[in-house]
Amino acid sequence: MIIVSEEISISNGDSFSRYASDNHLRALLRQQANSRHQVIATIVGGDSYSLFIWDWYERMFEVSNNTNNCHCFVIAMDEIAVILAVKRGIPVYYSAFPFNQQLKWINTIEVRQHSLYRVGHAKFDTSARIVRMGYSIMLSELDVFWTKSLLNYLKQPTDVYDLQISHHYGSHPRVNIGLFYVRSSNASISFFSYVAEFWVRYGKGGYLSDQRVLDALLNNYDRIDKTYLKAMKPSTPLILNWTTCGFGNHFSHFMTDGSAFVLFNKAAKFGKRSKTFHGEKKSKYFTVQVNNRNMSISQRNLLVRALLILQHTKLQDRTLVLPAFSSDLTITPITYQLDIKKFLLYWSEERIRLPDYLLLNSTQSILSRTLPYSSEKAYTDTNGILKFTLGSIPLDLPAPYPQFDVYVRDSLLWCSPPTVGGVWCLHHPRDYGATMEILFSCRGDPYPPCANKTEKNEQFLERPYEH
Image 1: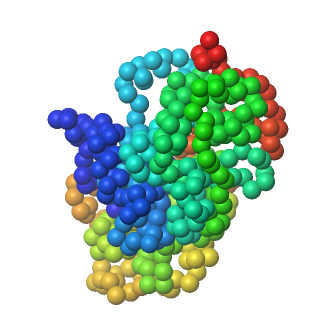
Image 2: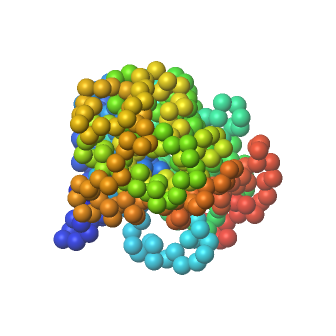
Image 3: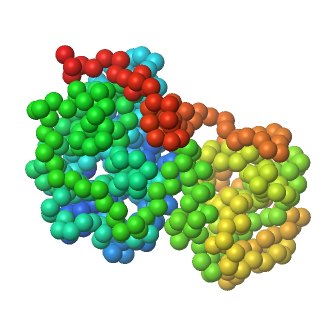
């Protein structure tokens, strides 16, 4: 489905700052929280990860005890995530820095660390705000895939613990900040308010990881690291009753190299994505079988344009599976040929599947038929995957509206020619996840595969709290 719906105005008071206000957050909590004042949230930033928030939202509905409310919302770290959430009708809160704080970010180190800094801010500051408002939050990162509602698998009695947090199952002793539950209490309000303030003051410029900061302030393993030790002054409100929790093992944490496409491709292979993504036997799809990787770019563009037009006119109830343009997707996947990030920003993964979708185990049970396309047929009563023959697709179809062709031209960015064993096709800057992977991989972690710990990897350039 192309993005042409609601616009977010940045004038007349209806700006992004509205989504970052306490009033907006309080209204979200009243609308989304369950009867026990519990709410589920995930953080997202960058255009790649933002493309997949619809799938997270669908999964939360699937595991929810309430078919009308998943008791969840998205914490956006940038304007792209806000826009994509609003356009898809997903409740969203904008975790933003005040403008006067951003004015102070003037050197190269601060710019490079901006993404990691915003991640920690979104976790700590939003959690602090929510517990201060009297609500409890289950914060789940986007690479944590639920199979059941984890709110049903908290350690009991829940009012004993201020914080329940996942762990690394023996790989190393730090807490795992990818999944945690904070109960609103005097102790959690005091603790997370302190952590949020500490992060804003000292998190930038120190090559700190949000996980290790929280671990140290919980008086856990990283309390012995001198980089963090002096942050733990006696006045620090560290009195918090916390525990690690396995949440019934009803989740999978698919940590990856930072690429959203690698992450969600891995989750799709394991069947961990939403039922809406995987489809059912009565699901409706259509595609064209193209094994010619030498097809010219102009011919590819005309074909994809025709398929998109058919989806928006004759086949509106069907999801389009992009043609492979390759005889072997393991050698030349579509991501080596087309800038998928750019394409899905325009056409949305809700209505588009990549070619390797047909190779998933979950897809094999869906009925598939190969036949020529006919404009005389509606295909509304035909379930499954329609594989139209290439020669039957008309390439001279009129666009449904004038701007349609503009979207087609902007979204179809091919790598030419696609090479066997090539590389990802990208035409624009990397997003948060990829940037963090490049800059912070093995950031001083002494455990395999990051066994090259050096003190300078996580050293403050200046440690103001030591003065």
